[in-house]
Image 1 (cartoon, rainbow, N blue to C red):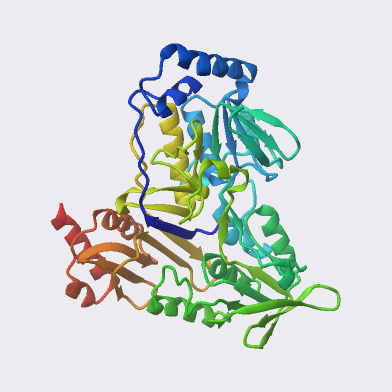
Image 2: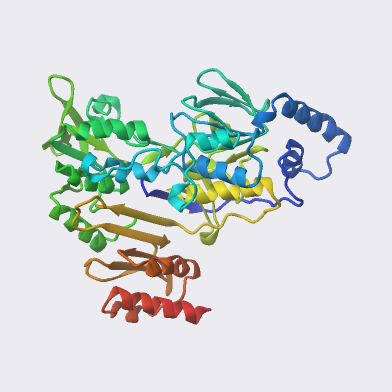
Length: 497
């Protein structure tokens, strides 16, 4: 839901084979594709697989494909099924939400704007408008013949029978299952006040609506967490003119990505807008008033911060739910898949935030919580499933954030990062408004972050991160402006070609 909340990775230890012949959507092909032995006897194979598969598909023709989860990845997967002519009467999406898939990043950005600042509302941000595509409203799914099961999450699957059970008791027979359950918000334990009235988490529209109703009445807001959610919600709170404090255990904002000097620039901007920071703090518990509503946060050092509203933004956990049997990655979390998003179980795939996949360009396993990956993984998975496409997913890590974009804001903030934040860093610019940070490892440019770039400058970033050119550090360090630094990097890129 935030623009880019996390990337988890570890050295790759996962081998994935490629199919040797044109994949089709049939259960027959899927079993052949994943058969551990090519010497299986045809009669045995036909008896054990084809007859059962054929009878099951005839028994329930309109659920050849089932997507579990109704977030960004599901919306983009649905579009891909439609593009391949394989949605009408064949695809079912099962979601716990009451809404058709939407662009989740809006929830911590424009959705939280005050009512006089033109906040975003559905149906305005259904997928796939975030990437310039068609707005897929509930009517769009009906028109395309896609079955939508709202507010009915899957609670269990039977791998052998190829069935999924929903919370309402529906039994769904599937030919292919795509798990796109995303993440759930990490929560404070109930025993320390994590569920008190006035304490909020944000993952979906219902959460955001509840949060807005509190913003309308709040005076003192405390945000726990110095990552994407903390930064984006605090920026929105400025528009509500609330007394806002951000508390986090790290030494600076966005510690997983920002350097200390870069974080300082953003912290100063927030402070200029009245936001206070309490860094390096550990929370002991949340305290309630006599009416049971949250009233304060007590820190481990004994100090207390008053609050009539608290927003917890301390990360998220992959929503693996009933899918543990598919095989989890213990290092990065989530369901382990190969470069085509196949799990270890034939006919079952996982995409988006919940998938632990081979990050090809860095040769390690990763799990990425980001809308860009949700979109791309969905498209890659469906293309691999329905066509002869056999190439492995080759993802370039990308994160961004856009804040202070409401009407009347004196300064809009929009940064983008591409690549890997490893090695030493060189920072160029004074945040007026531009600033750039370059990550260099063994002489190679590995990652780059740019604030307030032009469209052309932003377009350069993925080229740099993908090519990893050798750069002259001394030249970068002596650059007098962000524009000059980017030109130095561009020249390095051309030299590498």
